[in-house]
Image: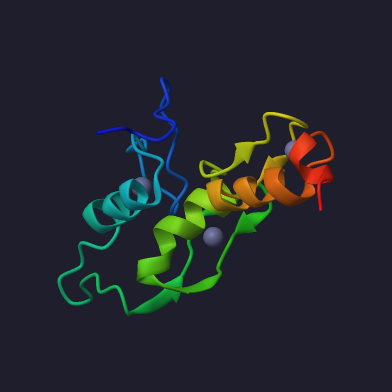
Length: 119
Ligand SMILES: [Zn+2]
Ligand SMILES: [Zn+2]
Ligand SMILES: [Zn+2]
């Protein structure tokens, strides 16, 4: 089992105002597991991937509040709030959103990649 970008330091969870539990797994599935275990424990409103709700992640300028399916929260937080899915291009060091766009970037767009030059 490989843990993507397992961090040696803990990342604090910024969901809601009072989460004291650090995120130990910054992958989308690890984040959604954390949300299920720690933030959606209300028996009257159980976690369901098709429910819609608002992202309660705090950024410097306030709560994100983006409207999403519960199933998308993990991916959203990983990509937008933690950038844990970002991969810097090894050639030009641009930060790409995710592994698949990095591949596309290297093949087609990277200014430093030799492969980008051939048509
Ligand atoms: Zn939390
Ligand atoms: Zn958000
Ligand atoms: Zn590049």
